[in-house]
Length: 435
Image 1 (cartoon, rainbow, N blue to C red):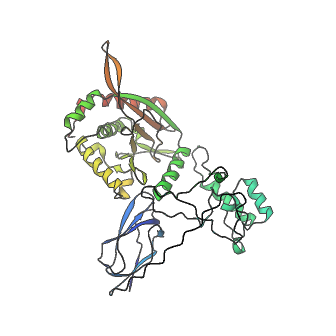
Image 2 (cartoon, rainbow, N blue to C red):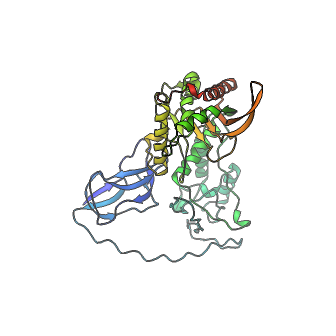
Image 3 (cartoon, helix red, strand yellow):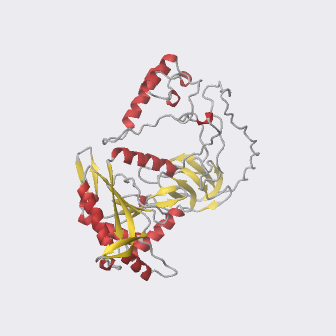
């Protein structure tokens, strides 16, 4: 009997959530065959088998979190009978929202399950109610003395979130202080405001509620953008580019079976602008008080998927033609929507482009994708009257929103950058589609 354990999946990846098991008991698998789909913080990975044989036992199920080295399958040379289906679970009673609802007195009893909205796309993760949440009112059966509760209140800490190290999980003053220290040391540095999470009120006082678990992508997005917003002093510069001539060029090269969007042209212009303004292709190292300038140009493109926002990265864009960028961008977006994006595709970005033109709107303030120092938001173009050579004529104007890190990019440089981008976009005849 052989054992198949979750192998190393990449740098800084220690666990993931099982989204799909690709084999069943009795199946014969070969070495290198994909047997599992695993959702990590950034992408969904297909996990290949390192051995071959017949699946005798499956020790995991969809929706569970597994760690590197954890036993997944037992594989043998002979098949075994598949276990019979478990009896159908009985329906759980609904949760009472009345103020006088009884609270379990059993120590460490899990919180009651709550209803879920099953219409969420691609969200098969179960809600974990085994640990306390800052959104849940403090339970009265927390094993802590009144003096410990008082200390927690004085420090502004929810006692329900503190792990007890005493007998039976009892919480001591030292546990509260250790938890407080952990919160302080885990907050991002860089001059931004604190990203501490405060307990929410009990919303059930005003009406019925339901909860939905965040998937891994949503959790990582929340953590990453909180870090970016609190550690980077953002400034957003707005401008408009006349894309009347660019739109004519785009339509002239588009075909019924292959339509071009405006995004590849913008990416090509941004790649040239990053060489003209190298401070936009940099990162800030506050630990050494240094600025890291990059000699390569990798541009991330925000992709809207049913799991949340992903930002796969186009590598060496400055060496690609507009046509090559268009082809790679189409393939990259398709992989993201089919959950085929790899970890390598999500790393190494120098600058990010977020195009919301297909949805609508005018301007917005995009958040910088740390450790980058700038991001360009693209909105929907609209026809506007403009004066040219003393005459008023309709022109197609594209709203652009540039957010940049004010620690290393001054306002004048931000204005120069976006003006240079606008002027380059307005002269599409200077763009070589094949270079």
